[in-house]
Length: 298
Image 1: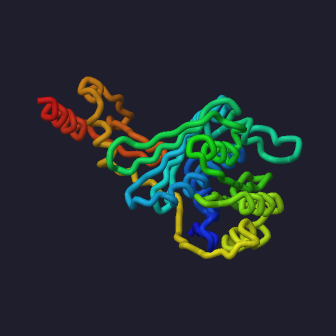
Image 2: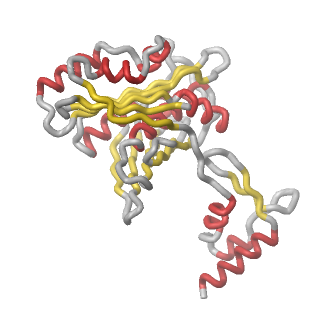
Image 3: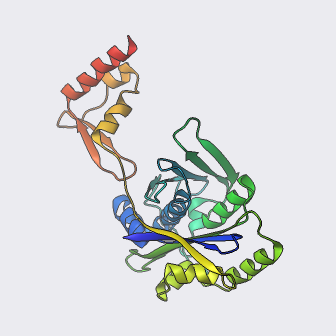
């Protein structure tokens, strides 16, 4: 099971969170049949959303990150709860691009460098909070860093990585870090942080070397006294059910509900975007929904 840890400097000036998301990214790859490139793109987004969701203070809050670029992957979406459990999907999981000249996966080219990144926080108490920014690179981490700087005016360093086997395309390692300056951080603290970050390896390199999440946070906050706030397990989790799909079907106009297409077995087939699980509704079950729709309209 993957996990997140959160740390803070004893003077309260800096916060660093780190995640090992290897298993949840591998799960997403299997569910969506991701290529090397699409796995790196969605894996980074899932990892970042998990880190961001774990920062939500309200127990039942959710956070959604949507990236809509002009690349061949189309739109990407990841949703996390306040415990860091995450799920997501993208429009075109089959997309694969040639490696860049430096041998790295071309995530920016697949996502697109023109478009928008939106973050929606839903605290379950009314209108969700939403902010969005223009894409910077399509590489996901840089775009999330830009979001924090522009939309929330919070100096942030975001690092995300997914390592895939160049032969069979299987996700081998995945992780991320989110480091933020807190109110009261002075120029000296920011300069020290910038120096630390510039000397660090990539997230996947650190994981491959056997560094723990604690080691990674200590490297980012080197020169400060560091306290561990908490840690918890995270993973890929979808909360879909047939009951949820029934409620969604009830939101359709009754005419559409009565004319839903059926498969060869005479069943209406619904598919979850997040996990590709299928739910079948018989003619009798659809008729019950139609009757409930009539009652609702009265």
